[in-house]
Image 1 (tube, rainbow, N blue to C red):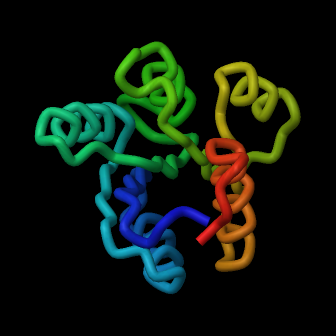
Image 2 (cartoon, rainbow, N blue to C red):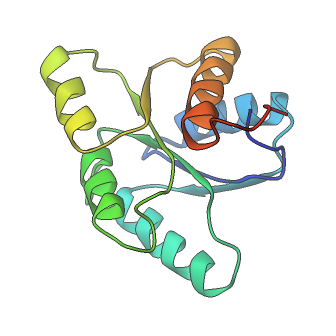
Length: 139
């Protein structure tokens, strides 16, 4: 599992959805949480935090958002040398195969269908942690 001090960015245009996800991370003991209402603001925050020396270490993003949606944010992150290795968990109300294939082709780390539960979030975080840290013992 990711360390509790991991800098997490929660991206969703719904204030209620961001609150739900924040609450789940709080229950898991995470304390360094940021939020953005769309992919464009999220990307700006990623750049700002990187310049400040406090880079975001995990993004959980909704798929459907105005301005820049989750898949657009994912593609922008994966095309940037600075953010390419940044873990991203896609949060979606869609479980359609062709959409999931698009996300997989864009190199999403995993996806979570809304509404997320504490256990489903924990499992996805463990899977992503193992992907990026195959030889480390989860904390």
